[in-house]
Length: 207
Image (cartoon, rainbow, N blue to C red; front, side, top):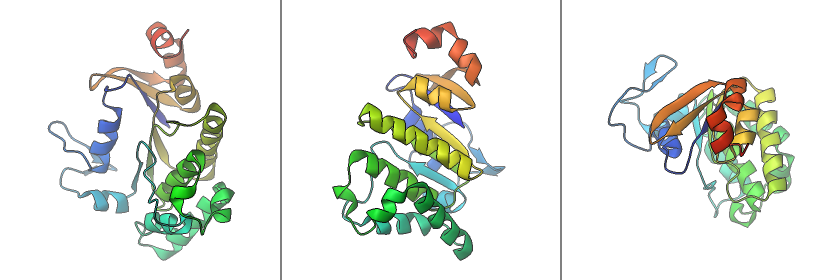
């Protein structure tokens, strides 16, 4: 799990969009499991194992909770893996079972975030990108979301990229991290290195 922190406009969301294929890449190279993604369309990247949970949740409000999960599951072509992934989603987020027939737009903000994460996981990804999962949520709900992220990591082997304004929680939850400033990596290293860095402590941790 890699935390990506930085001020607004640093390029966190742009980085994730470039990886998922929803934003153009004008320089550099993106490889996933040894494969150059330059000519891979966004839906093909999703089928290849990349799941992007965008900023602002962006659930399909007019579809039910169950239908949202099914949309994510369609990215996995293997029916056995698809069924297993969906079962794991419901095991991780029991509230989605209870709300299965409810329109996603009627859920609370925290429940919508769980649904957005669950929709991403339903494709059985090997890379899960979470863009500002705490945005707009009450502190108690944020704590629940980070507990959910920890549960996801414990339940399956996958790489997680986490972009977060709440830098302390993001770094603490991750193995490694990097700091973006104006689209460039200003600092990267282990969780302990970032937590000890004077600039990170002053600018992002409030210490």
